[in-house]
Image (tube, rainbow, N blue to C red; front, side, top):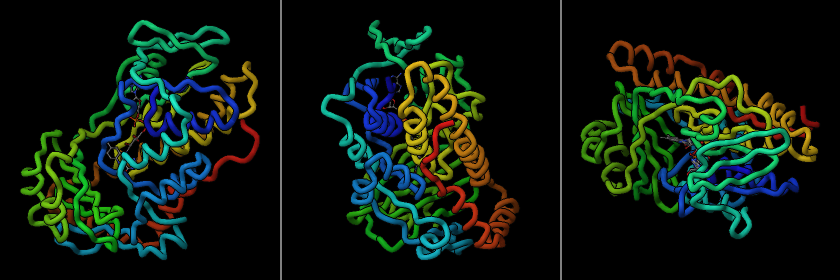
Length: 377
Ligand SMILES: Cc1cc2nc3c(=O)[nH]c(=O)nc-3n(C[C@H](O)[C@H](O)[C@H](O)COP(=O)(O)OP(=O)(O)OC[C@H]3O[C@@H](n4cnc5c(N)ncnc54)[C@H](O)[C@@H]3O)c2cc1C
């Protein structure tokens, strides 16, 4: 059983079916997983995982590659810039952006007809030797040999295993939107201000994905954003003007301190259920795809009695990389919220003085996902 048909659940289900397992995919929403969230960026590690998942070609066809990567100040000075050639040759590739609805369509296309059981909200888990059951809100149960919680940041499966809800508010919110603004040669960019950041990423078909992070709560209207980013460098004000206010989504950012364990017995977690991270590195979905590939590898060919061992091997392989992203994203997010002029000047100076080789090395490590080829364990 896979609980949750978001990116993590859909990718995991597709891979497990291909490995010969019978999969039941349970989704809370009556109409299937939501496809909002405007757009997102996927980095080379996600594309490597998507090759194994079987959706890389569809994602490439629906996304735009970032022509380089820039860090800038609100006035537009460039603090750091990596040209597309440098990213391809030394970082393992560049990022790509696509509407979330297109990513979901590419992942749903991998599922057989009727594979997602919609309106199936999991409210608990019951385990006994050799069997596990998902308890549903309508009083029903679904039984199987193993259960994978892919039910996102507020995972009920995680809560059933470990109790409580220890989400950590990060103290800032992120507004996101898609503008009808064509500038396909604009590098992917992150602009740092005082307690605010603005990101830009070209999309196919004359559109631009943008996100704005700002200290405080998730109360941000289109007017608030236009006012707060009015004096920022081009094309930020134009991009905000070219966005339909009804399409702006605002999310209060939370993450969770890394869990010591990702599962118990025949139950494990993937994606945000296991390791919700602040979005500062744009790695949440990328890491979910890595989880799916490693989990399917560990489960392939496992006899029923060794499921717990396979799930432990999966978590042991994945925890280091996923938790490094959680920790780095947390601190990057906080750095982006620095406010005082002196602190911001120090931050910008440090970024400017950091040799490009250091940034290249950090990105190369982040983007380096090698799908497992050895025997599990
Ligand atoms: C502001 C912001 C920007 C981001 N930008 C990026 C980015 O650019 N790149 C990137 O890689 N990541 C990004 N992320 C992270 C990304 O959105 C998540 O990491 C990703 O959605 C995780 O996928 P998931 O399938 O684990 O969880 P989700 O996408 O949350 O999917 C969980 C699914 O489980 C279902 N579900 C929930 N509870 C139950 C239940 N009890 N029973 C049954 N079903 C249930 C839900 O309906 C949903 O379909 C961003 C996040 C935020 C907040």
